[in-house]
Length: 191
Image (cartoon, rainbow, N blue to C red; front, side, top):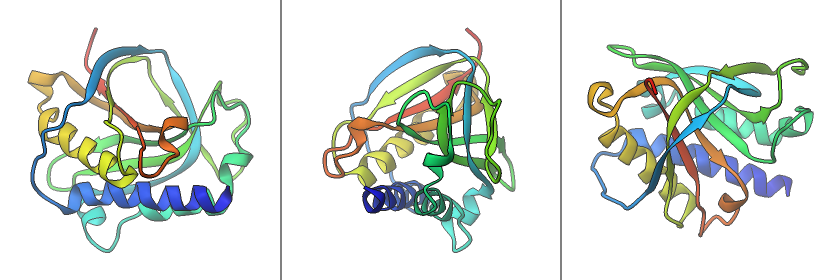
């Protein structure tokens, strides 16, 4: 199981990297709906990175996923609300730098007990566009999903994107590497 989680983490990270490394737009049919989420709490490990860093040799996302899985950090997190693992993206900085914070972790009921070496993050109550990928190869479905979102949902005025917190949820449906279904969430403005 530990090896499977490590492989899963590396593949997920590779997929996110590939979104920034390749150009082109694919039009796929995603199950999309608007959902309301209450305030959510997450515990995990974080890094500050940028689009340029992830596109080059200085990327931190794959290292973060690898560390999370290899060190068994999921087991250190108490009060989990599910067995899903999350990749979160927040604190976006646009313009010349295009930086953001990434967290790999688990959703918890509260942040009362954050283990040493881990960090807590509070995602405020918000509306989200929930994208459910079609089943397929884990790397490809996540890569295609983010290409679709960044290609179709980056205009904050027409699509109401808030850039407060976006995230990927890797639950039970994503465990089959060749038939994975992953949920991607994009925070939206207002009600």
